[in-house]
Length: 302
Length: 302
Image (cartoon, rainbow over all chains, first blue to last red):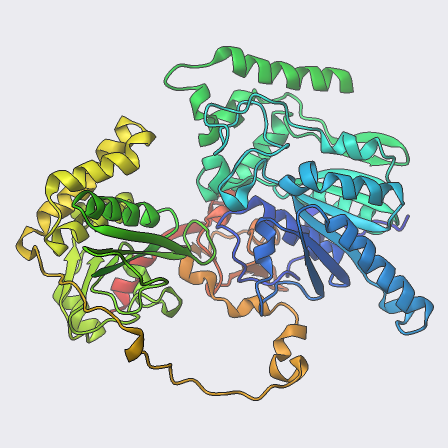
């Protein structure tokens, strides 16, 4: 593994590789994470973009990227990455692409794709040991079409298809990946840029299937004012609801253990999608259930 | 046939305004068509919606090119070419702008031949400007009764709860009442026959290879050509006397890569692309960033 270059905030990139002028919402936590990731990852990448909000990053003839971009259906981004990887390998084997001009295949997919329809192709790609980086921006719903519930929608959240609140549990995509024994997996959030940058540096130095799971606070879908995007993101970490961790060399390590943990109420009450937990009557049972699950998670971490 | 276009920003209820007006026409016995048109489908991004209403079946389809009335919920969109507010305005087209300035001021400023009316902010209903425009349009056509408008708003908004309904009703009816002196100002436009269609005067371009005809395809970060600064209603302004040159907070956390930091650690905001999310203001440790309303700046500049 190469020596990490980013040790403190001062080492974070001060100019940006990702172009301005994209069509993401003002205050988009997903775009925040993607630009931080891209700034560290560098331009020698090909993005394979599953249908979702980020599809609107590259609307012909405009692109914020400095390299290639391939648009796939929601289910097939990981398969698209296999095609890109194979094409690059074949070109290099035939001497038509110098080895030093090799590119990294990067999947960019939302939670609708990553937790749901894209999971089969992704599972197969990890199984084959595909050398790719999989970036999931997780805003816990089908944001691009008006925030319908996805496999990532957390317990209690109101969406267009769960008007009285989600009754199902959020899937654990990190654990699903870890069960495949990938080369690397990490959770990140744009609101914690140093933690994010260190993980991207590490991921960049490893080959094989790698997951970057970025929680993406979504002003539009989660119903908060855009300026609070960072505050909501920090609360997700401080409450323990979104654990920052990585899986490397066969072990899961938490990179940030919130102590003391902020009560989940602070996170929930700041978002319109949980407003029904507080008014017209406060749903202490459900709030308590959400808190208890977080507590149980961290008890198990030890 | 009436052809009416609404312009506003995502989040101002433009789609709902068109639906409410359409329903009001329908309740009066008209055949109706209403449709929204999104570009970016994002809060703050320019959107428009249009309504056709006629006593006979409507064969026309698509965006309204020759409107009888254009209602603008957000005056900052008027000078934005991409918003297309002034597209197809003729001498008989009535333009309504939600603005604290007078219709006459707007008419002179835009050098328009036709009538221009202003909906004062209290009539325009602030965040309910879209619904106020629906009320204004209902009055201006002169064929929609107050009780039909009310019934239409109830039908479109009722499901959102009593409080939201009351606010929307108040906005729609206030605008309806305010425009009583202009009832019937908007007249039905003549039918458009395919026989009278003239193709636009476009320039035929020869077919060339993509590299020659569209060199931007291979260019990096072309998204900068899209000036998303037009989305902004508030402008973040850095007080450099208070900025402590931390070198990373605003620049890293700006979701849109719109803040770069100079070599001497001075952050610079790119106003051509800043969407006004105000994340920078919220996260700046020494509180060196203030929000200035774009409208006030525009007025000061005049």
